[in-house]
Image (cartoon, rainbow, N blue to C red; front, side, top):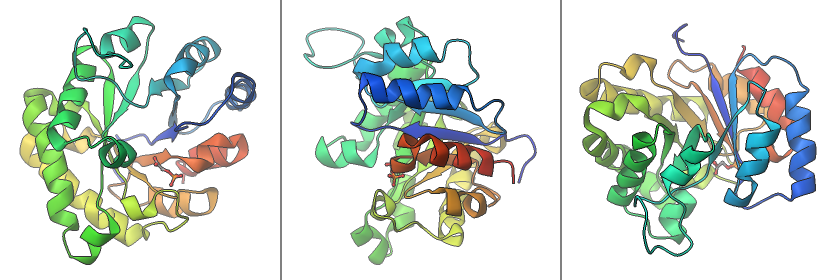
Length: 250
Ligand code: PGA
């Protein structure tokens, strides 16, 4: 593990939460005291203001789960990166597999969203990952490289500013996590691809996501190219999420 890469653990709340439930969760995270990893939560858009307010004087960052690729205009229902930046959003997930699958987001649209976020000073967390069919067909490497390459080309010399999250689609919400070896193998490929594109590759954070839980986070995060996690289900329970954040210390 490179000592220069502090772990980053990001909660992806997906479409979960209520004002009251978020209040309890954010309070528990805030009162946990110093954590050995950088930590952030990505909340649904209506709750971003709540996250911003509750986390204002804490070390915990917050982010959105998506943004528009457009600056502004007649795009009903969309939220621009400028709007997110307007009240201090630090991170934005882009290209989560649920958006790629359910909203037909293409590699290029994901890249454009990453660029829109970066242009407003928001760190895009770019998600890549293969489906089970693609893995079984031996296409994992080609798929993740294709997904990352679209973003690298669009961001150009700013590619080193993104965070990358490898999330095998078959491991998301299924309880079936990639083995540390499987995850590390893909992370090493992605790191090599980034090395060819940016001098910042060695400092960039590559997160693993897909059924990360308190009992498997430590061994996943101990892999040389895994710099933390993108956590779905387990990020909704303060004790589990905090245990995962602490696993970054080992
Ligand atoms: P999971 O989700 O931890 O519930 O598998 C991860 C994600 O989709 O980001």
